[in-house]
Image (cartoon, rainbow, N blue to C red; front, top):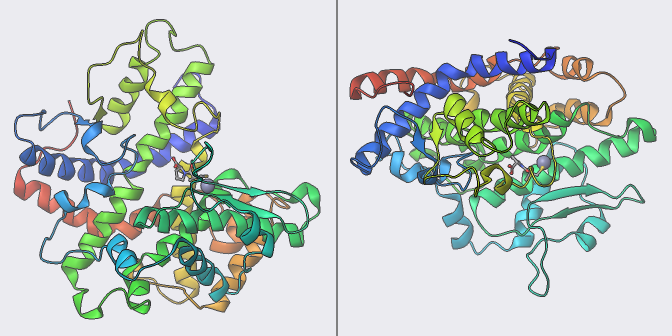
Length: 396
Ligand code: X8Z
Ligand code: ZN
């Protein structure tokens, strides 16, 4: 393994655990896109990054319509519903807030509403990458999001409010030194966990967005598939973001001759994703197009958060007494679950993260099994379907 820390080997193992599922997902998506774009790329090689619906190919759910498993059970289109119901940006935030308060977490503070930036300003340039800030003074917590009315922002609102909930909880309960997340992965996982409940079929039925009669076994596979395009596809990407930087900072990348090609070599090796156009090591620096690289924000926190949010999610469903078909569980309004969650948030960094995790979920380690359990029905389906369609698995 060479120059690898214990931390890196834990991350390596988590990625390895998820890889069989990732490879099946990759094979299916590639197979479908390969028939759509006949003879445009190799059906047994890496997928070109530019056809996956996201500028960095870090999530693929924006291509759902073209790769959906069952077209007879289309998923409810949250963007369409929000537009039809004439949702305002403000309503996206009050809806997000209501999920948190329904389980007994904190409402946003007056300064949150007064001082946040919810919209892209027209009179000046701003950094639009979404963020949440703890100003550290008199209930001053803010988000900065160039919100648009669509499903991705619906999710991002929950993500950023998760940061705010964490800030509020540990600010109230902890002395200054412990006012931070148990680790940075925890911070990134809070809002994502709640966001997953918010977009679950069970919750969309409650909101009146989705008709219960439309949810059948095809719908459920489509839903799991959609979430895998968002959550499973993300793992190799987030892994490579910091693998690349670790190599670079250890002087294991030749800056003159492979600053860009090494980035793509890693994306191919770990994710089976290749550049969409010819690249040039003298002219291109593609990693730099991702916000967190020039802003020097570590990225493994998101990898960890993606593993962790399924542990939180499973833990919350268990507290509610749900152990099967986890994708159909919704903890909206459950104060008992909320109380345990709030307790975890309130602990901030006053104990080690593994103790805090154990107190909430009963597990004291990062465990890929929660994510694998969640996607088990999809994994079985993908294996069968790839076999039946003759889609190869893996990439040359
Ligand atoms: O950067 C973010 C958040 C701010 S902490 C919007 N995320 C990563 C990204 O956009 O690349 C959330 C998921 C991954
Ligand atoms: Zn975040």
